[in-house]
Image (tube, rainbow, N blue to C red; front, side):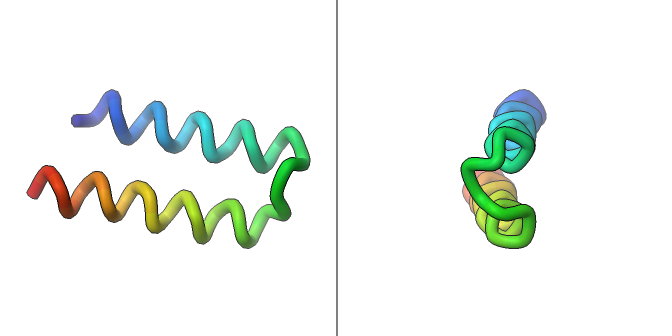
Length: 42
């Protein structure tokens, strides 16, 4: 599970750094994705 979250965070940060999304919307999307992973594995 930790690997899934690490991968999601890495991909989300890469998207933000690449300028594909602005930082705030990228972080919001990333938070939702990580929360979803946590909830589905709880």
